[in-house]
Image (cartoon, rainbow, N blue to C red; front, side):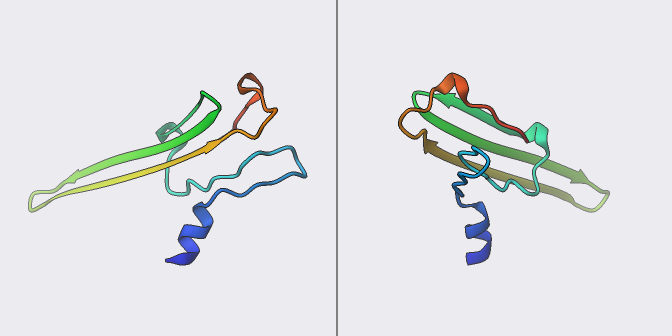
Length: 83
């Protein structure tokens, strides 16, 4: 849905020195990886789940990736993040 896509879009915020807010709802913090390299920030989240019962096997897989360039003047070593 459009609302879901909008909630995952990159939101720029200037008031609290945040570069971006990314919604990774549904992922455990252990499933999320943030890499800062070559002037880019790459956020990935991946979750696999498998349930077995005597009658069925269920597998769920979710993956999310968002990549964006750092603005001019932002040093890679100054980038911090919280999950």
